Image (cartoon, rainbow, N blue to C red; front, side, top):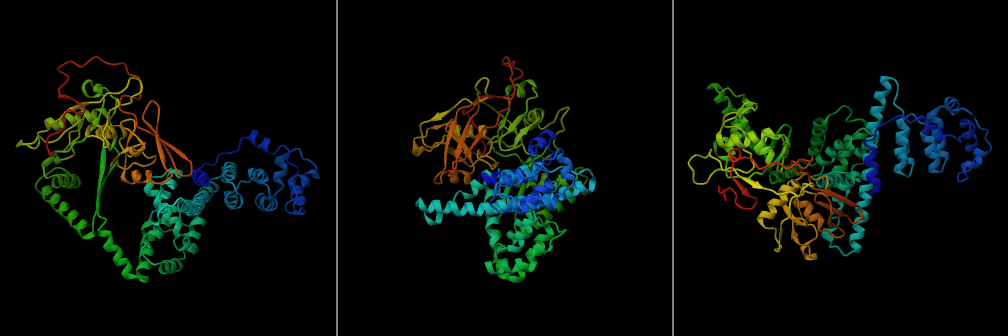
Length: 578
């Protein structure tokens, strides 16, 4: 896994110049380059290079020696003749070409040495050379990603052998491998699984992976080719790979959509029935997802069969055109967005008995402080936006300095809110405040505990507010499971300190053999996870609003400022929809 992590660093590395002092220290004992090469050419493989260098007269000026040597050709000869990794490092320091770094990626056994070679590449002085270097480095990123794929396949086989020896059932072999690859590559667990799937397809699609290694396809576009042939048999997939022959330049200049179209057409020609069956299965994967967008907006996405999706969009379009022709001043897009919310929720303005948590300090809510708030499941939002949305949802109006939402638009947010059950006016909201207590100086939420195995509602809400999203490193999925860090069957208590919010996939991965986790003492709640290879990863709960800076406690707000009813954390929830 160290090799996977190191290669991930190569794919995003920069190309700074080598400091003069560093270069001089590396070549302090170097003899004349051309005579060294002549001596090395006659030395049998395995004879120490130092013996050859001993017979070479020294030179005072290394730069003059370098100027007299054709850099690429001679360094390649040196690389072929020198068996020592240390000697390869010294040779690569003088190489100005990214192409030679790519050769080093194949020839040098240590990823760390490739990093050293990459750091030695000098930025070209002319614009054309800089563009060439950018292209060559892009090719290098693909070569590094292809090497990661090779390592991922080898790691998968290794882990399966370990699991077989440990008595893991056959249908569970390979569990957790994708998650470990994801952690090493600093990716989400779901993406780790896709990367492993891409790597395994390498043997079935040699042309595609040859283009991948050569830089003709980057990792994402190689994934697209593999994805569009996933429904085919091995024989048909190999035939499509042979037909497209990506390593011959088939996809030169092609973007994502063009590549997908070409591969999809080739797959259909080989096996129309498999493609049709894949489309039928895709209908069962329809879903709706939500993800944050910039500026306190969000993307609500529906994955639908094409007929239903087109029909829904056409209906919203027709409704927007009708309102526009009747004098509605909103844009077509605004009307479509507002109508979508109203139709889905069943009420104008889209407000129903839904519990949404907006976490902010009492100073932000009541005294106009600028400390940002946090919308659970979304992220940081501006303080003024949070205050305005709470008040606007109770009064239906905006105020100076903030743009009020268009009539009938938007989604309601607040410290807590929902429609009041039994009222005729569904616009009326119940807005409340739950007090969350933090430890002075650290911002750690004051712990709650329970003697039960399952987390009670108040403690579950506590974990969701504290953790915000899945606590696995690099996973931003919504919290679906309330997990005991130290399992209950291992005498782990049901407490805030031993609890964490996880997505469903990460919670199942954590239960695989060889995975352990434990809370780590610190200023904020921290969990250390150990994988079967012995690597450890730490996850710390995000800071709550008001805890990023030292703030002196303020006196309690005057009664007239506390315009919203204040209740304790677990005292009451919105009655509507419960």
